[in-house]
Length: 302
Image 1: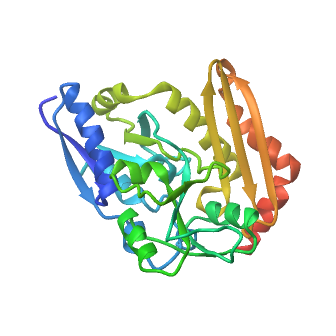
Image 2: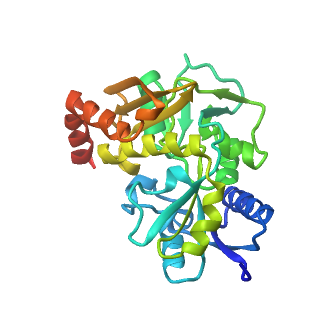
């Protein structure tokens, strides 16, 4: 491949780290590659929660357009930001080995959950799960890239803010004062990076598919299939995580009301060889057991 592979990416520190990781891996395989940073709508509009912007794939749409019009050849995303249905003409080519999917609470000094704390997050999923566990707490909105959000926490009187552990680790910003939220179910595909390309671009599909990590691809496929059938996206508090243990896949999920007062939870185990379609099956089971009514209530309130 004579011309460099043009890698489209958001221009935040974390997105650039992810794109550079893909660039380095492609170069180890003998390909030339270069980064083409762009700014997304999600990065520009920081005064509204994501779920109020009403745009599917708010962090990916700009790169989708750049790819379809030939400005870039491939794009690298945090997989949890990618809509479960990709735009026509764009395909997933690789899921890199997943990092820790956990959520963490970065604390601002001493933190005692028994107190009347204020905790910040821009995620409906995190907010609902937090209020479900700590209904006496106040949850406030928090937007911006990782560095911006960390600084907002420092400058605030909040007791803490919720982050994805992987994002902070990747750019070496994981502080000492954090608590692992092992009870919080992460967003589908949290901690995973995905590469996408034009469907007709066989050359770049072939180059990037070599980066695929099969276990990560299987687990994220289950989680995103679950999300797609529930029709949640950014508009509903939905968590899902699949983990491979020996020959089994252990799956956990939750669907909550916006205020966390109602929570539907699920735990399943299935053999790896039977994973195809299981995410959809798990979602249909949750919908049949109260999920349909809860999703309808969420949609009506929005």
